[in-house]
Length: 257
Image 1: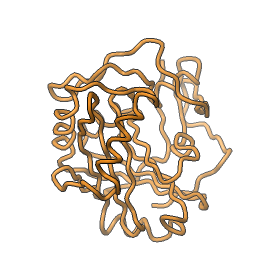
Image 2 (image 1 turned 120 degrees about the horizontal axis):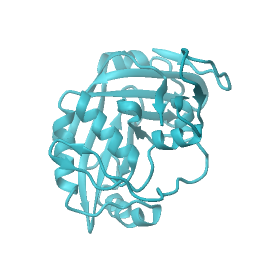
Image 3 (image 1 turned 90 degrees about the vertical axis):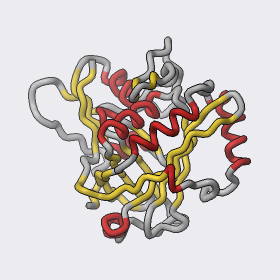
């Protein structure tokens, strides 16, 4: 279903614990003062988290223990045609803002998703001394419809997304458009995603995990050379079919502190 975003409108939700409408600093994300222990998925202990997750940054922006509410559109910001993977409050979600180079607007995308679903490819890639994840989202009725992200386990958002997707076999899609004030928010089943996550982790866990832009530059360049086109190297064994089952809330609301 398409929701209409209400830019600048802030509304209280519920009663009791104070509610903070939290927003993220638009500047570069800084590493944590000290790394924190990584999450556990199956029998795998993930590496220490060096870069804070969105949830950590939102909680810090709230400044005191409270309930934090933020729209997914605020989390994504002005990032175009590049998916953002988050797992705030145990909800694995892909955030994506389209532009006219992909489709004119959001008209009929909701129907196409319900009819055809989407595909998420998730693979582990060994890149010299580093291991990174390659994720490609394919949307229906969108040209060319492929959206790639190269991610590191050193980032809190990545670990939170993987843990939530693995635990629940669901992934939310929140799709926006640069020239449209509507948004599409759907919850999708992702049967088999726990296996795909496990297989990817087994490939990359023995390697180092780059945290900063500088550290990532070389392995990301190597991956770009390995797969010059986004469609290159996509393997059906690493694909999860996302099938829409219900609406998703277009915001996150969680307790901090």
